[in-house]
Image (tube, rainbow, N blue to C red; front, top):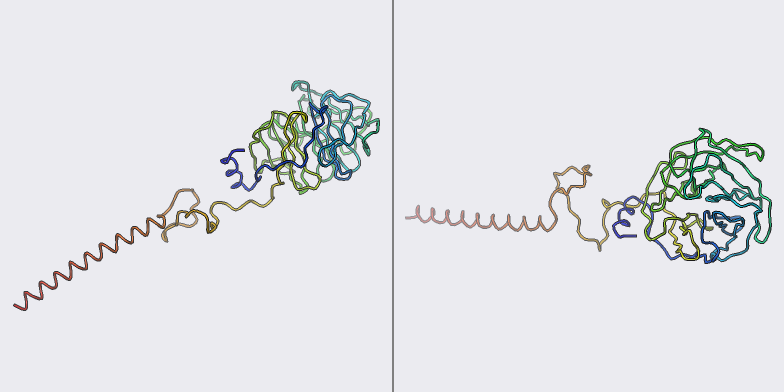
Length: 324
């Protein structure tokens, strides 16, 4: 991340600098990770390759706790979220970005590493009869599921999913384009990531509150909130060769801007003259710096002294003339 990017984001009141990862998965078989989810109740994370028939349970440090065999092989498992006791796996992506009119979500109740399960299968279609590639599934505060398509749309799944027939999704709103993963934060905000940008969004409208470039990561990847709720984890597509980084969850309160009173060690900032308008926030420098004002005062004092000496000399001459 560049210093310029950090400075810009600090003014926007968002993400601090990247931190060393505490979650550092190294499982050699996770080389095409389509989805990563946190499971606070189970004190673990879940990861799945895009076309794998097993989901991996990971400990808090990223080490493998065990696998859960699904008995099905997804076409493109690109999203995953844990809601209460159910782990939902979104088979919603298309191979090489291909669009799909019909997708599948698998529901695994009480997943346990080392077990083989038979997930519930929910077939879904987009309510406006469109086709999309997607890589993101969110759970709202109420537990409702939403799918965010890569072409910038949000669709809500029915509150009561059925395992027979097809469940029809409802289009909710626009979303940032190019989103490959996302997570609803514990405070209700939504974090979405594209290949090169991390967005913080309003939970209801998905309007972007702030955004930041993601530097030094491969194009693919996931984002998830840490088990303790304090960090965002940005993981690469390959746990074998990629690097995972974490950042503190950004505060909902904007950081102080450059107009705040600087610390004692800060460089002097432009001081505004008494006649300037304090409400002017255009960014232009109004008035003179303290050094410029001091120089001006010194100059003015010198001029006044010279004028005073001249006047004294003239008065002295007049006094002598009248005395004669």
